[in-house]
Amino acid sequence: MTGSYVPESEPEPVSAVSDRLPAFPWDKLTPYKATAAAHPDGIVDLSVGTPVDPVPELIQKALVAAADSPGYPTVWGTPELRDAITGWVQRRLGAREVTHRHVLPIVGSKELVAWLPTQLGLGPGDRVAYPRLAYPTYEVGARLARADHEAYDDPTELDPEGLKLLWLNSPSNPTGKVLSKEELTRIVAWARSHGILLFSDECYLELGWEADPVSVLHPDVNGGSYDGIVAVHSLSKRSNLAGYRAAFLAGDPAVLGPLLEIRKHGGMMTSAPTQAAVIAALGDDDHVRVQRERYVSRRELLREALVTHGFRIEHSEASLYLWATRGESCWDTVDHLAKRGILVAPGDFYGPAGAQFVRVALTATDERVAAAVRRL
Image (cartoon, rainbow, N blue to C red):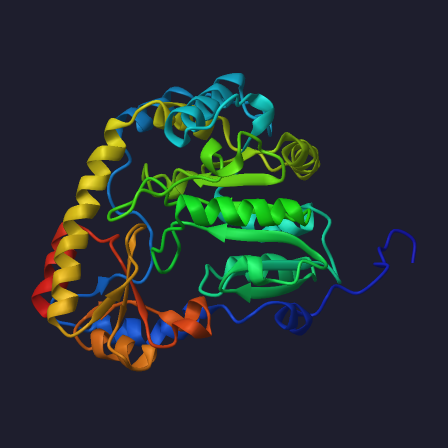
């Protein structure tokens, strides 16, 4: 019929999408959340690492001052934003000779993790590898690209054949484990020797408690060259900007240049007010120190309460989580705590190796943390 549209092919059915992706894990927590919420003093939700403290005032002011931004922002960001990112990378990570070509703003780090294999052109027959205990989106990204994927304990023991993308995550989500400078140096050298692109998720790097996390961009790790390596950084945790969707990449220009072009075509641009907020956030270290002090206090209280209650804490030397176990099924532990009004994340969300652990987030107010401590 004239004027009617007949698609060339039917849209992919929901069942086919489900076959490509794992089940969304957080849905399984719903009944336990209901149990915890029924506590007379209310729920203490330690299951999700979302910031609860205020956005620092100087960042809010920068956002408001840029609110009158009627035009489209650029994907690469303003020169001032790139100056702020390169300055922070040099000052905080110890990187050298970093130019605008070495950095790329992104719309929060999760979208990058989920879509990177697709944007790199990976597909069937290409392999993506990530830690055995890991943020689930590494696997999701490989599945979206229909690439092969596998988890590792030590990446240098992987078969390099067909391995196109290697994810590191230090400090780790969920375990808080930190890779030493020596370990990072060994892994970077191995990846380079096999021509494997290495992306290092370093979103918790400024939240080290019992260890001092090091970036793959540090010259002691990479020998002064950024060839084949890219670091991922986020302002969600260090500046309480999860709601702003503010993050960036830094590393090999030969990787970031093509990604920039792809992201231009996809319209993947950080809003102009957010860009202004990021400039303010990266230029100020005081608010990061204040936020760290909040987390240190909460961490000490929760750690002591959990250990006294019979938990063992493993790793957890950095990041926003305590990786805890009672030597039982993680779901039994989730149930045990939910009956006390405390909601935590089961360890098997992050891989089968977490089956006897739970992840306890530090991202609750002081009042709610105190309530959890009383209940434990």
